Image 1 (spheres, rainbow, N blue to C red):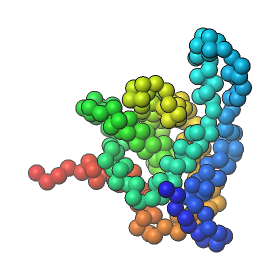
Image 2: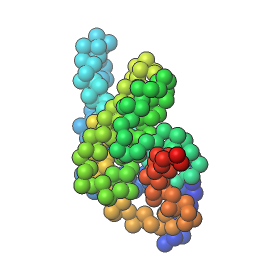
Image 3: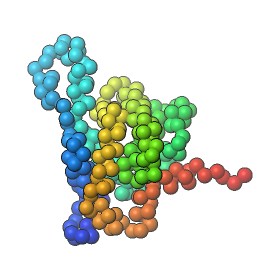
Length: 228
């Protein structure tokens, strides 16, 4: 659910979805990663069922170059992070950044829970590497590999749950394939967004701190050893 806020400098009302969508798409352009590069919107136009079946891989490869759905997913994910009510759900599935979600997934009986585990922790890595954790840049290649693999596992889990490809499983697969590219776009967004701090300063101080460090802090709390 989008949250309304007022820019400190412009005194203009905006919503989190609109704000993040504008900033993310602007960053795409600045990094040279404009949406839908290589996508052919008429690739399957007029093709027979036999042709589509025989060339399913080429059709899928073309579909994976369509990125408007990824833009929307990242925008909504960023918008949700500005809503403190979403933190409880995140905390249920978040693990330490150096832990292995794959090992935990083995113990989960529900395909839905496995999907959520991989998706939440993939989002966690994407946003940490892109926006929050500059201290991870030195080892970013290893974390990027992990983030990409989590999105791949999320896609596989969802396809198993739904009995085949879905729009969301395609989004997970696209994020897996181009994980490093989306991290780069988010880093550009953080660097160049003139109103980045304007947006944050409208959130009360306690909630701003929670937003800035939410993923790391929640994981630390969850993994802190108990007494005895």
